[in-house]
Length: 371
Ligand SMILES: Nc1ncnc2c1ncn2[C@@H]1O[C@H](COP(=O)(O)OP(=O)(O)OP(=O)(O)O)[C@@H](O)[C@H]1O
Ligand SMILES: [Mg+2]
Image 1 (cartoon, helix red, strand yellow):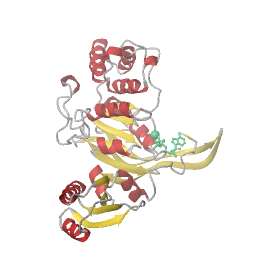
Image 2 (cartoon, protein in one colour):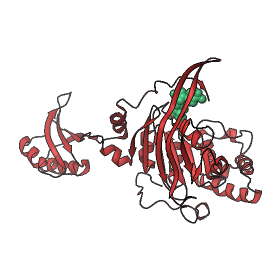
Image 3 (cartoon, rainbow, N blue to C red):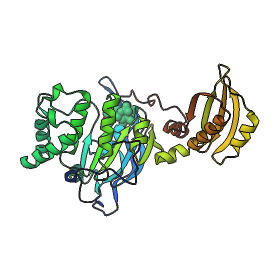
């Protein structure tokens, strides 16, 4: 499917057999698949074999709610606390404090039930048996979930078809490309048809083509499943998630829909049109005409670094401002050599919320401690 053209109000159809009959309301009837309240986790630092008394606060009080049937993104740079958060939610790590429920089950008190609700994919190469083929891997993990063989067989075929791996199902996984392995990882994560799917950096290390394929599969998981996705890829979060929590150094620094997060950046939307040498017209008149449009705040002419003249627009809507400007330039027969559009991005949202660039690790990222 074309993710760029995806309309959140008309979610993609899924194959019948992989789609639960309805979006579940959850055990507590709250409509919340994941509910996280003030979760924290600290580690004790370790240098070599020695433990120093110093604590690393990996997660410092995170709260968020994920409605059923949606994709929620936890976006943050390296060391922000993403993996620690989802390890707690998937019961692999006890929280230092705070609470969370998965489909109404408490991650500490109801550990077993929480696990039955979840399919979890952690980043990295581990988690598949390279000597086994795809079907054997899925059978192994299906049995771990207590599924019987006929059901495993049926689910495996459906999932491998969906992951475009059916024709390679009998080949050993060691012969798979990175993208194929990741698709099989996703199939493994879904084998027991979990209500909630947690994906830790699902496209990390994939080439752009393979990443697009995996993103399309993730987009197709809703509304039949609820997806919690961690990523440090802004573009991925923007494309996939209905709502995003931006985390930095163990804290949520901003939360909202991608659109709302970008709109809050207070970054001007800009269009710059580089004009051909021979563009001749009355500049103040054109500027006044453009500035009179509802979508344009300001229009000016400025030379760029190389001395070429540029028509620069500060606007509310880049598409209609660009349309109008190009139409007016055409009226005057003015040639255009380049167009540059600047829209607020999630990068700007992070900068605004965290007060620093997204790139770079958290200060504590090289800390080593015991869990
Ligand atoms: N077992 C551990 N012992 C000590 N410190 C840890 C441990 N696990 C995580 N940390 C520290 O906690 C912080 C958050 O780590 P975490 O792995 O949750 O970040 P992340 O957001 O998943 O980063 P990345 O994008 O690199 O995967 C980092 O400073 C990390 O060094
Ligand atoms: Mg991580």
